[in-house]
Image 1 (cartoon, rainbow, N blue to C red):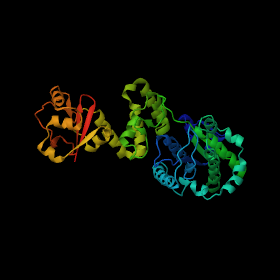
Image 2 (cartoon, helix red, strand yellow):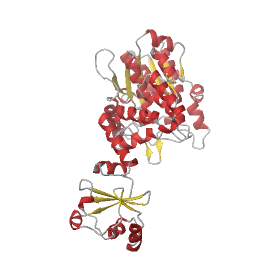
Image 3 (cartoon, one colour):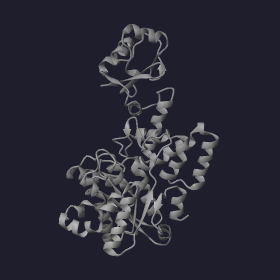
Length: 422
């Protein structure tokens, strides 16, 4: 299957310039996507364009990952109802460096063949003077055409409006296309469907300044069936950086995918081929309760982002979450799974002699009084490391601590407290 046909089958083509399908099939293209350095990590919303570049490279095309160290200082109004917070030069530079390290996991960089390139538009935007830019670039844009862009029209209708700073963003992004065309013979820009206006502005500018025909292809914006923003959870944004979103949380995000979305996400975010995805689609139809498609999606994407070790650690932690006993769990698994659960610290010396369970329950905040603790134990409602604890005269000791580091107290089916041994 050729690249364009594969992209179509995966529902990744939202729109494109005339002739882009034929050019992709008969020529080796150099294509770029821009990444906004507004944070020190990319998030799962960035994963679709990353995979698009990786698919291009696998089909023999040359990818360029453009980090917007310059445009990131301005702010893209696309998809935003209010002005972005302006970054400092130092913040943009730090974030751009972190993003480069992340992209190296997915793209093969190198000088030979179709090795990927990294570029940062601060290199050419920062040195250029205002008068030079307005004369050489600005004169090729009419205010009428700039006002007609969907991202601008949406902001003009809002109470806050749009600043001249963000209004000028499309000129800067268009100029990026000219520079990349000059330096690397780049002839294709990709992006989300909300970038179509910016991409066509760049195509027009290359034609006017260089007399060359270049192309654009936009991907669909990722949505979910629940109507909530993709990549957002109750805990916040799902990041690709393990320090911001643990592999376990990352794995759980994909595992919790709605049945209505899972096949779409398998097409978007994995390397699985058509027969495999169609087989998983059939599984969703005939046995949705088994959630085989969701488990496959979680494994595949977590492995891509965090490696096999990260995926396996996430699966071990998931077994802790859904298992009936923590006997075989590691302390780190427990701390990862229950990182949002209220916790307390307990000196190791106290556990050597043993702690009266009623006292520990009160100290941890699981119950409010020793009387309530005693009743809970007698009624069989206390679990230590998910094993029922029924003898109020026994003590909780170091032997109950997983790896000597942590004890999980549970009241009933759900309420827990984590005791960290120090």
